Amino acid sequence: MLLKNTLASVRLFCLVLCALQFVNGQNVLALDKENHEGLHLELTSKLKAYCEKIDTSFKKYRWAKSECETFSWYHIRDSVLGDPLTWTIFGEIGADHDKEGLAKKDVTMVMCGVHGDEITPIKFCFDLMYYLRDSLQDPEFKKSFENKVVLIAPLVNPDSYFKRRPTRTNARGVDVNRNFPTEDWFKEAQKMWVSKYRRDKRRNPGKSPGSEPELVFQMNLIKRYNPDKIISVHSPLSILDYDGPSLATGISLSDNVDPNKAQELLIQMSKDASDYRIENYPFFPGSLGNWAGQERSIPTYTLELPTSNPAKSKEYWALFKASMHKAVFHDIRTFVDGHTSQNQKKLDEAEKKLESYAPVSLPSNEPIGQMP
Ligand SMILES: [Zn+2]
Image (tube, rainbow, N blue to C red; front, side, top):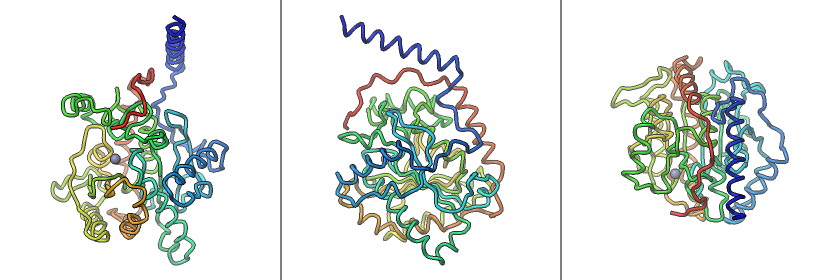
């Protein structure tokens, strides 16, 4: 009885909270505003605690200290369980993220840890961070980096990674790589999950697109920086996949990307990693490749490392170091004096669409911490 009453009060509390949220018009899905206020660079106590968690996990996987605290982190929103969703930047962007200045740069966005049970990619992003930090000490390298900006989000889905037994899905049991508001989401995402995947807990697309903070985080990074290319690191499929403007179909929604150069980079990245297998993996309703690559023509490269075995991290970085260097330095823009407004228009439309969805209501009742 007591338990029942407690549950009833919890429910009531949630309902009131959600109603209040609705009344206040605070849509938790709302994308960040254009201005860059609230971008934190100082090591807040929250970030410090987060870095300690990262270090503990690095210890668990027998990696060297993460040096997480030595990087400058930006942080706006939190994961479902309240860990900061962070990114760091290499290259000159100015303190105010001057949009025009940024538009002239060749911007590469790298994301890891979208699926927290894929352990090796998380270390991979840190390895890239060490590489850029150390290389930028060299004046020659620094000079060649002048028109580059690299933003790295090394752990997009911390809740799933920090579980005692990490999972693919976030704390609400949603696959944050199936939750992007792609045009086919409403028609296909749930249907596919039920019929093709028989409600496989690992592939739950969520109840509505853009419902997860880890998803909105990714969309916001894309909106904020308008990257010229995206590298998303996963494991363990041993392939390099590309979504975006295609030579074969001639389809490009963006006239600032040269499909030739985009494909060239794909081939170069493979070559530099002992002819790593290129495969045109199908894209899914709600996936990044679909939303960014297919629908927005932002060249999106998915690097699937061979395994999720943390003991292999060193080996994988050695294998892909040259590819990642190439990914950063290979400019695939048709012209370099700025982006067209076309991409921005599409992003604005996406934002409007997203804001028209109902706010997230109660957390899913699905148990968390499920293993495949
Ligand atoms: Zn993955």
